[in-house]
Length: 292
Image (cartoon, rainbow, N blue to C red):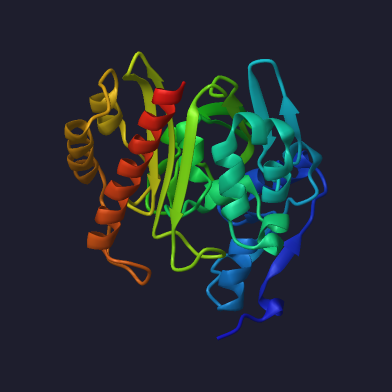
């Protein structure tokens, strides 16, 4: 059943302090919305449970993208269009720029925000594996102050996070130390564009003297949360890429992922694709190392 607008209340405090004050006064009663791309899907289907909405779209502190010598800070309400068009993001964080360009269509990219994607906590979100790969740090803010948390600790389960009821994501910081890495991203969906991922891979690697110096692998849609393949990375580091190592990597991937059967795909298919995507990346990394 389609929702009735009269059943909902929307307020626009107009300032960050106003938003935080309202969240503090009535914790868990208000849902912040920026682009609203996920919220409107629920609303249109009559499934939006929270009736009190706070508009944070025009809060300046949430829209800034700032570049520092050691990091880039992306405001949580920065759109995917702003992210993918930023020259430093495109040059030094290509996996994030690519994910932004693959998230929905142009209309979604013009409204959808990086912070909203994080807070929505879908394991199928395209941008989240890149944030894991780049060691993102989130700044969370409330009237009680700010706290900085590694992004890898933010998701605690399917659609569950450590975000307190009175907190907002203020910004996302990425350290500027990955520009020399070989990067690779692959999205597998029902079609080439505007599709929710069945499996998503974001990967970085460096090869020195024929061996893997460093490797970073993250997958989406294969577990309740976006997943960094820590065990597989550890197993690969320091070794020469060869068929036997790739076989071992495939077995390691299967031990780390936890795919499910759902409306988009099956666990068996996701397992096979995840292994194939890691294999493809390692082959390309080996070729990159051979020509470096």
